[in-house]
Amino acid sequence: MRAFLEARLLDALGAERQALDAMEAMLDAAASPSLRRAIQEHMAETERHIERLEQAAQMLGIATPEASICEGMQGLIEEAQETIEGMEPGPLLDVALIAEAQQIEHYEIAAYGTLRALLQACGHQEACELIAQTLEEEKAADTRLSQLAEREINPEALRQDQAEQDPARRGTDSAA
Image (cartoon, rainbow, N blue to C red; front, top):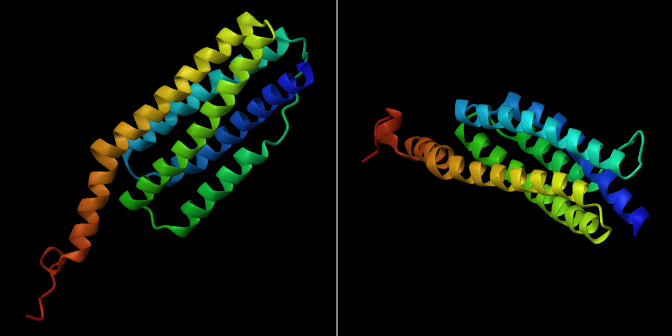
């Protein structure tokens, strides 16, 4: 159980480090100032998540935690990169970026839920509390992304799509 717990912790650490790098690309691709701000805020939060994971590793006696590449996160990041490369900048890409970011958040929520339960089962209460704090922050980040999508990003993409579909809004003459 101890070896499994350590492996999950190091996997989460690797995932957070990878996610931080991916957020840089998402930040560069985002058009919405609100989305850019949300990404920047979550990047700062992710730095704290990494610090907490490193603290938890020290509490478990892992002196210098060497995070491995998290294969699950790598797949999510590759999908996000394909999305960024395959779409034009603008509101629709912002919709897609939120979708990709939420997939990453959900992966992290699952990882932190498991890690919290393992730490609790093994009697590592202080480390468990650190991870529980991060778990709540990941859930809150997911909620903020949903709210941003529903209130701003999705409606803007829909307006743009409708304007592109409506010949009168495009300024072109109708054939009728």
